[in-house]
Amino acid sequence: MLHMLRMSGTFYCQAELSEPWALQMPAIADSVSFHVVTAGTCLLRVADRPPVELRAGDLALVPRGLGHDLLSDLDSGPGPRVDLLPQEYLSPRYSVLRYGGSGRTAQLICGIVSFDDPAARELMRTLPTVLSISGDSPAAASSVRDTLRLMAGELVRPQPGGEAVATRLADILVVQAIRAWIAEGEQPAAGWLRGIRDERIGLALEAIHAEPGREWNLERLAQVAAMSRSSFSVRFTETVGESPMAYLARWRMSIAESRLRREHVTAAGLATQLGYRSEAAFNRAFTRIVGRTPGSVARDEVPGP
Image (cartoon, rainbow, N blue to C red; front, side, top):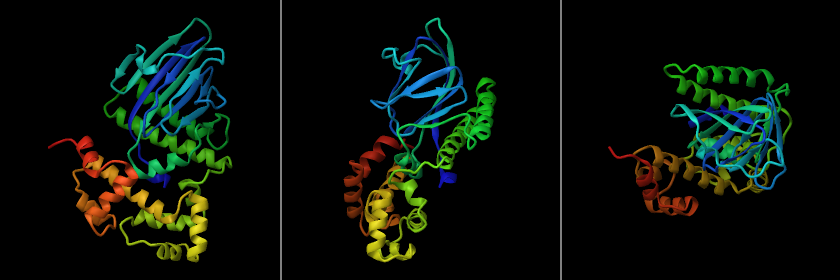
């Protein structure tokens, strides 16, 4: 599943921040923010959770598009929104920010990566609010450093195609961080990531992802997992956090919403492809789960010919 993960819409900022300083990172739906400290230290704080200290070489992800603060120390008051500060834009997707007082300097590479892929959405739902990887971690040290070195080279010396390369490197960096987090023995909360690690439930999830339009029911999914219906239903719900059929419906609607945003597709076509017997049934399920009608999503997102 990690191999299928694709991001888009990357924006990078190389920040040089002198103490005392504080910055607000705005909430951006369907995105993951990452921060790499290349020199000095800083604190990362999300809502009322205890701040996470980051040192040179450390990497932190904020996976769920949440707003958060970067601070030089706990005494720093609330700072301005970073996107409202004057910056030197080296390209439409890359800027250099210099901000703060006259004290010690910290240097960071920050990125915002958006995603519209169903697999990415499910993965981000299962990750912690802040995922931090120490630069000294054996699981991450060399691979993360190598990726950051390549990314810095693409950003500092812009070349044709450099933006595309940097975006793919951001994909790799996010995957490396998640793999390092798993390798360090962290147990995901109930959700997709925990489900695919279960030897039985993982088989059912892979089947749903591979053939979302198949006429699945509880009995067929239980057969894939080689379990009885009752045992499968209980184990799936405990592991994933929702019932098998609820997960199937939400996965189908996630695919449908993504395709409506990117492609010229009809509700009738999606209904057939995703296992619904009528367009009306598909429309009811989509509106209930997504909170909008298929037509409104398509009108908002897909550009005209």
